[in-house]
Image 1: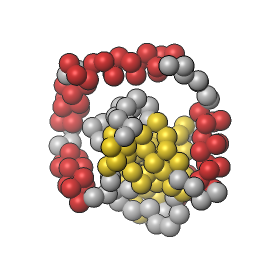
Image 2: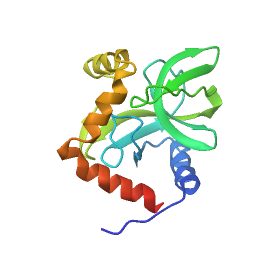
Image 3: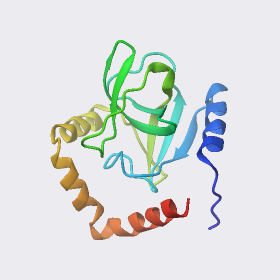
Length: 163
């Protein structure tokens, strides 16, 4: 399989142009910050333009600190958002509304099986996961080192190092 490397700014310029046209866009995800609910290098995310209110539990794409990031909204207050990745137990981002570019509408497990990230069952799992707090760090360490995850983890690591 031939891979084409595109600079993030070029890639997201195309994504945002499609969203501005009112289209949904499906993108691959890199990284581990949304584990266990979105797996970088394996899952795809369907995005729509972030119009209207952004509320707690929304998964959003935003530009913060010069980078494009996709994480979950923990809370909102006075036009500022407290956002954190599901696989992150310590760091938070605090973008303003203008920095939020898109909202996830669907996760495609392994690029195929659609999952509604806002279904009651999915949100129960997310809230239970969030209550684990700092224990998530250790659970994710074990999860990433399970034998069936090593292949995609190593593949994803090589992909990251090549960029």
